[in-house]
Image 1 (cartoon, rainbow, N blue to C red):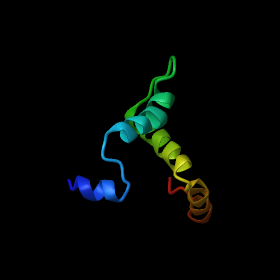
Image 2: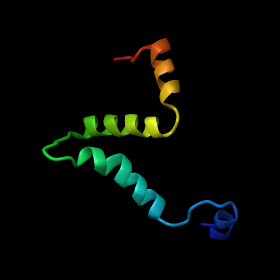
Image 3: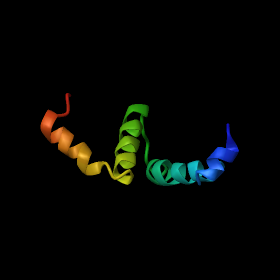
Image 4: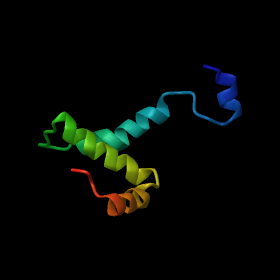
Length: 71
């Protein structure tokens, strides 16, 4: 990696940001008391939580309204 370029562009170079996102997106939801998840359901929940936090939630639902779910 070109760390000097990342630092110059004010981008994170450590793992702290990744660890914080994992705690926020994954651990807080999937590790609640008594919860059991299969891999597919856990992946879907995490995708929705990520969409919500990425400011693309409204865009996602507009697309679903236009095209349907495809299920």
